[in-house]
Length: 347
Image (cartoon, rainbow, N blue to C red; front, side, top):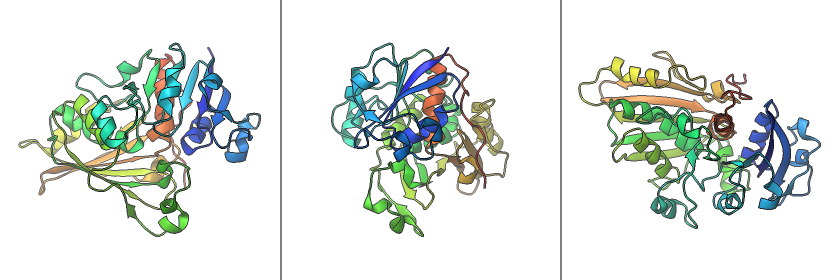
């Protein structure tokens, strides 16, 4: 069965990556692309790498334009998806790649985003460990999915196995991320100009202010954390895409290194898109470029009594568009890996 598809925000980085991946999806028929300021232009005028879509023109983003499709991907800024989604048919599969439907707690939304709170949808990270099973089972046959924040899902995938297995403590969690600027979107921002980031590493949202913090804590509570506390610091580095997250946590007293490693290996055994590397190996962002793959390396720092988890993802693929399509496949009862690359691009 073929499903008709619309992508809103098609002129942005996330929208463009959705379209790149959807071009090779055998069950999805791309019918409509929408934008805001770029409406009326050919899609390839703003996404010139997407040569298979030369026939598509960007339309205005509205509920009327998006209505009538089987699947709608919303790749819009936070605060822009909620109202449009509310007007779409309950029978339409809607995947929000923005933040509007990620958080369960209205207080978290008010504190970190502000504006109208639209309520939580099922979280689009299928492999995420929960106290019972994974998030995958909650995505089956749903018609509303919230794709993750790229930083948030990377850290959650890094730490949730240890939380669920009871081998790490849920307080004093620390994550420092090297991130590419594409995660901040395509809109012009002075601090993201090439002249500002080339040859430099730039921390931002320091001191517990980043909007992905409550999303991480929410995911870790699903894995069994009672009241997770995390120090989270992202650093923009001069690579267009990618996340390298280094997360550490205190090991529960009396837990040996083999038991710690087993928690991660057991959690992701058989997962095609989340892979734990052999002992002593650690990933690079180059290893996952263009792939819907998260690679995880871990070690136990015996002197510090902490586990160190290093995770690499492509923020536009596994961090956003790939996770959205993977979740849509599950909701539509398609093979989960359909249309998604596990192999990266090199050099």
